[in-house]
Length: 247
Image 1: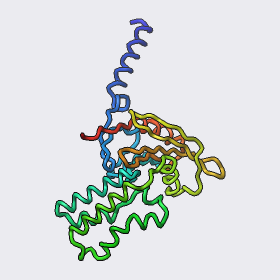
Image 2: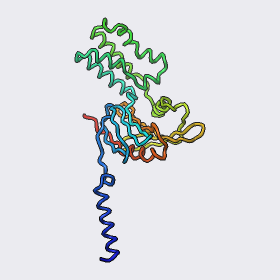
Image 3: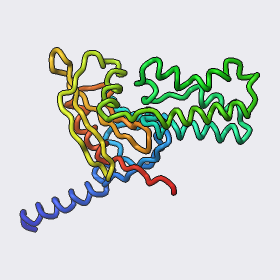
Image 4: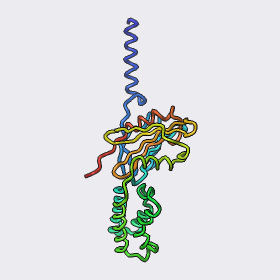
């Protein structure tokens, strides 16, 4: 057999081996539940995926990415949470309804001035200073007031959402936005930003935010240098696809 033919056969064999090997085969998307959102995504090659419900972690060595549902981001999201608490109360699950309202949080509330937050909560706090005294009818009327108050809250811009996420991060006070762009990912309007240390302009990291059905999804670099995390961040973000909401 001639040497050129041998080389061609060896090349064909190498390609076939690569296509059948796990490291070379096409990776299939997996379905995960991030908070209340069902997503399809592809874990970056060589990275470990840890499913913690609202928080999905992706790790390799000391580097880490996090995909999270940060809760209600709009008045509509808050209204949805309160209507679910109202339904729990109607279903006879009083303790669960009280717990749902007690743990309610959302950017439209936290970004409001102190007095506006107090006014928002006053219909509820007025009747739950002693929850054992208030009957279900009284709690139901208070929930109706909260639902109306949530609908009247001002909208929150994406710039406000991004700024809030940055200030809440462990390095927020020391970082600033170096670059920001809109990205259409499978029909979803993400905002992707790159941050750096505000003094040295080094230690670049990535963050992407999406308002989805009233809730805030974020993908962020938790640890690691951009040289390690950058390509994985981009490939993970490009793979994320939200499942359609049921009618």
